[in-house]
Length: 531
Image (cartoon, rainbow, N blue to C red; front, top):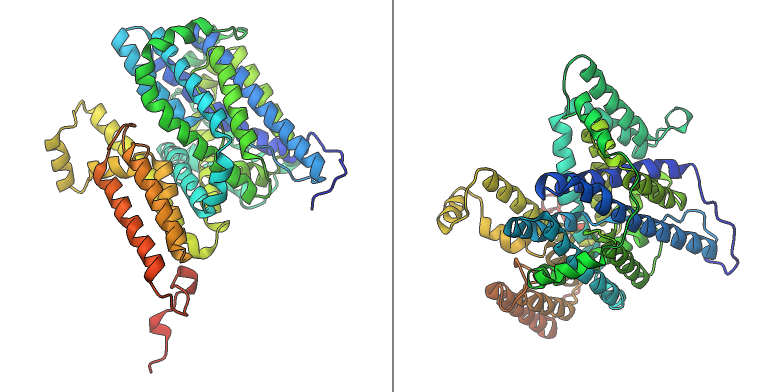
């Protein structure tokens, strides 16, 4: 219950240790992946990575985590509650891969200069930042009219496909470390077991993984790519680097504007929806944050990071309910920002990359994927469960498409019409993955919204969402690879026809007295007595 009296708020509670190690390791993994992409994919010079990009990234993330800690503090103080958890934030993981492989890599290959790829990435973030700031004013309306099952279901799809799947694979590639670390985490975070002296489960899992890896190294074995030689060479990047303005590089990147806008606009919309989903997820866990302020903050800190040399956008993360369930409140967010400053400004990332096995961290990400996937079902009416399942499918299709493309790329095989036909003959519907997975989070949201309103017998509202889906599809925001006109005409037409059918059904159909046979009202015909 809210109160007008401001009450003292503890800046640190014991649960913040759990959330710090959980969320901190999540951030650490993302920074390690980011560094690997820049080093091994873009072939960026190490002085640019450790002297320009990572310091700017650290500054942006410090501002973001500090702001959300302050927002949680003021919210807790205003309401008099002691269970308010700060929103988690950091580098947008999907965008990390998009800006690397869609913007920076092609331009680097075309020009032969990774610096130009970096400059193009800066301009991409520049435009994304303004899309976020402007979109923040329309996002609250979208939240009001969109069913929670659609928002959380689309979020669960991203969480399962792009957060949980790879860590799960990593764990089973190194099961002795991965499975045991997973058990250490689940026993504490799902099972409620407290370890001696309140030691955080995440710290125990990492310590166990390091003990196994370095114990094996001492016996002459290499596990999970960790070895003493790699650790020794990592110290060459150790040192202090303060972020410096990169406005001249942002200006130079505008020469690639035509390429950049093709992805900047649809992914800006993706950001809006993702942020709304994550704010909705926090509200389902009991913490209400204003969507406009969240999106505006993401846009502002992303813009600051861009002007200082960071080509990766900031976003509110999936996972607030997980960190809150661990006991995280205000302090974990600010402490994570301090940690990021140390990692990025002192060149510690390279050392950590050589010291900690990723497989010891992967179970934490799998836990978050499990929690967010479960929340989509637990925080919505049981009758909406089919809509949640429908919302998952586009993200699963997008994930499967990346797997197929990765396999074809590794084999050096070009995608041709003949290959697509051959794959279809073997059950791999490549074109179907492209269409369903295009704009996955928007596709999942629209499809699930239609399903929810059908379940609720609000057929005219379902028709409106179907027509919105038609418009988004026509312009390539859904079911397409890029924005344009008449991108996937048959799918757009299908949405129009579906909308017309739903509208007519809502206007003309005579509803019966019995409720619709949704899952929580299903009757087992076998169990019914014969008449």
